[in-house]
Image 1 (cartoon, rainbow, N blue to C red):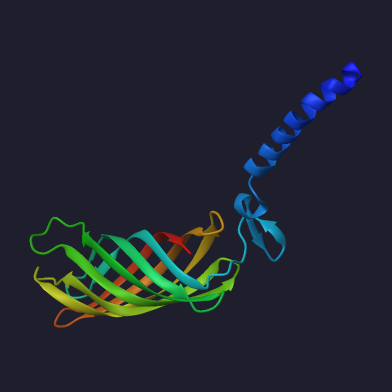
Image 2 (cartoon, one colour; image 1 turned 90 degrees about the vertical axis):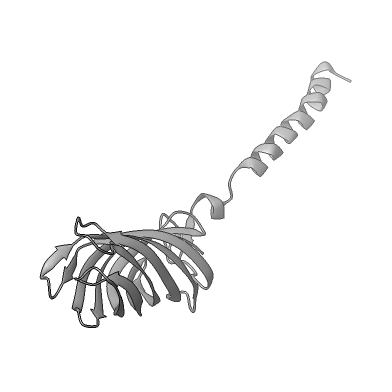
Length: 193
């Protein structure tokens, strides 16, 4: 055998093993980016069918009708639900938080809403919810508030299964013997589909 042929037979398996290792280690198209209707996209229309879970944070300003004051609430959200279609989801948003106020009395805020989210274009969505919340009345005692919210937001895909959304919503609750609570809110969520 010629010397050059011996070198080739020794290095060929090594080169093939290196190429195979690089091919196996390289991320596939699905792992490296999001695939949408236009091919590979940073964010794209995704199939949202199936179970999802998420966490979020929401803050804003609550207007208390009888006291005619604004109090800033801050809350943490836990979201579970499922996608009915690629563009429509139903879920439950459970939250706990409080009001940033120096006044004595109850400052706790907790509750939940059943939510419906419809995606109108790519990640742009409209969301509505109905539910109840435990919140302080103007006298400082804990009261039940019933009502709901409506909002608009945008969802960005971080990879094939995780998404982040930012939304602006208007929360309206009726507290018996205490009037209406008007709360414009800004929120951020992280969801895993």
